[in-house]
Length: 105
Image 1 (cartoon, rainbow, N blue to C red):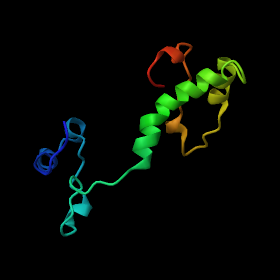
Image 2: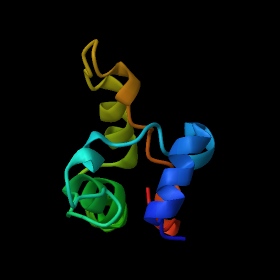
Image 3: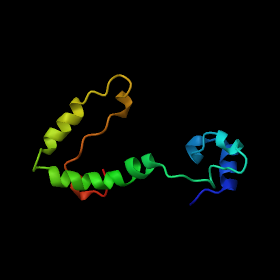
Image 4: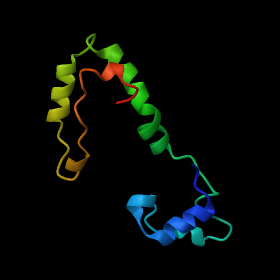
């Protein structure tokens, strides 16, 4: 269900981000004739990284495994990747052996 200005304002007043997904009223809403619900822009991160990238990666992996590297090699590299101290919480999971039967990674 798409969010409306009224439902957004209601979610702000509920003050329960876990249930509504809204943490607080956006500062952008103070701009005259602007509201985050009605003035939408393209967000490449959500469109690509959290959207189509999952589907494209499956096709790329199907093409590359085992032609260029094995699934074990890929998972070993994922495990050994140095995320540094600031990105440890952003580790990606290993690719399961049945990845090719799934809709997305």
